[in-house]
Length: 120
Image 1 (cartoon, rainbow, N blue to C red):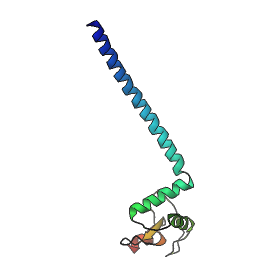
Image 2: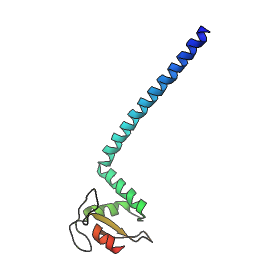
Image 3: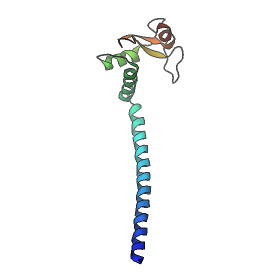
């Protein structure tokens, strides 16, 4: 009986230890992955990847994503009202947007947010 109880306690201790170890390992891995992603999305390639992914989600269709991204980055003024474009965390009337046809997905222009909303 004594040996069985000792084995059961040891088994339970091992299970608890493994749970704690797995939990700490998972937290470390999540932190490593988060910092890796932050470093990647701070690079030019990461920024392009993020923008193109967002545009695909919105329904934009193109054969050359790199060319579209370059056009987006190099456009300094709205192609409709000629206002100077900005890049903000929140949309303002001068935030840079990719205007596209919602039925075909074809890109039309790089516009300010104000013109893009009026054009829909």
